[in-house]
Length: 101
Image 1 (spheres, rainbow, N blue to C red):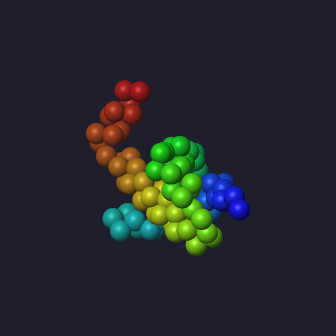
Image 2: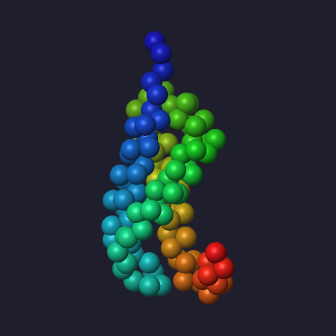
């Protein structure tokens, strides 16, 4: 029997769960914020899904349970990366660097 390819299922699950977790965003320092940056989330997801670790872990999935664990890992990674970037956007250093672009 050929192993199932869980790649698309995992991608779909990660994107859906990340959006669900980011509505609304609660930041300890800034209170509740609405999730608004869909473009940023997509860019982070695209980068994450192109990573070698994503490809390897997807190929190692043999069961639905394996796929669920991989999806959970990458959902956490996506959400934490998104939140870290959004927190740093208000930094004067980041704003000055963005102005140079």
